[in-house]
Structures are given as structure tokens and as C-alpha cells.
Length: 247
Image (tube, rainbow, N blue to C red; front, side, top):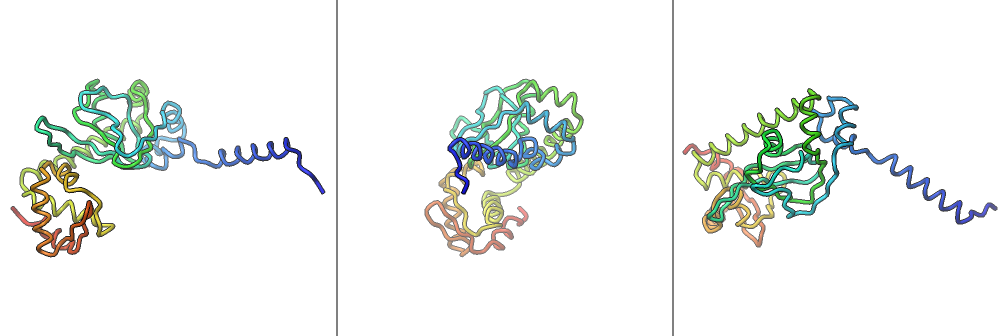
């Protein structure tokens, strides 16, 4: 029978830990998997981005950047969701967009390129993990790496289209239509939406009292059931039909 000494067991444990670390995906691998457009740049560019980046993990509710603050880096979201919103002196706010895994923040790229401050705030809606490329390396990548440059510029086109859609909705759709569209989209995977009336109002750029009144109208029509910080969508088709109604 072979008896292991403590030093032998320690060596074996250390070898096991090293094997586990070797099998874990590197930051370059994770960035490439989450951002296919950057993966097209090749391994050398991915390694360069990974070496320069700081990996950050923040909890839900953490403010990642605020209005009139300088941009500290270009975020590549690996997991979680960031909510970007603009705040107004009367206390109301307007959600501009969300940044999800495999996406980045167009305001960050704009601030870095223009050397300006943020015009809005970004808050972790869930626990978030992201790789942050520092400003100097971001600008160097823009100049030296065509695939990275094309990815950043594509952000502007994609986000501009979504912001124009938001402006169109605010301009031409009534609030009940926008609320119906929001509920229908949020309930696409699960009929129960976990959200406060205030959170929905913030997302729509409205006030809680009006949203509550509209939700009660929807409930009276049998389209939703209201609970504490929960809304169960009963008739998603009716909500979608209202959202598509011409003004």
C-alpha cells in the first residue's frame, strides 16, 4: 500500500488547481465568444484587448457612470445588463437604452472619441461582469485595428436607429400604446413581469401615477393581473394590437 505524505497531497492539489485554471476560458476567449465582430479581428487583437482590459464585477444597482463625469474606459459587457438613462431637473428620467452581454455603450465610445463628459448615467440593472478597455488603448485600437474600429462605428449606426425609434414612439404614440408595447415585449419569454410601477414610468419617461392608472385600465379589460411589484400578462395579443394601433 502506498501512503501519501502531506507534501505529496499538497502537490497533487496544486496540480489540480492549475489544471482547473488551464481549462477555464481566458479573458480573450470570453471576449471573442461574446463579441463575434471582435473575434473576426483574430487572436492577436483579442489578446491585445484582453491584456489591456480590467475585468470588473459589480452588483445590481451600482452606478457605473454618472452625468457630467469623464469616461474611464470602453466597456465590453460579458454578462448582465446596464441601463442607460438621462435625468431631468424635475426628477423625471428617460431610459435611452440597455447594454446587454455582447454589447457596449455607445455613449462611452462617443465620450472617449470626443473627450467629453457623459450626458447620461449608466446603472447595473443586474449583476454585471465587463472588461474595460482604458482610454489610451481604446484610441490606439481605433487607429491601428480595422476590425475594432468597424465594430465601434457599427455601434453608432445600431444605437442611432434605436434612438430614432424611441423618438418616433415618444412623438407619435400615446403613452398607453407605449406601455402596451413595453409589457408585450417584456412578457415575450415569461408572462410575469417583475417591476414596480415607478420603474415602468422611468422607462417610459412618464410618472408613476399615470402608469398606475393605465395598468388598472388594462386590468379592467382583462389584459393583465396586477400584484406587488409583479404584472402578469393575460392577453399579450391585445397589448400588441393596442401598441400597433395608428394614432
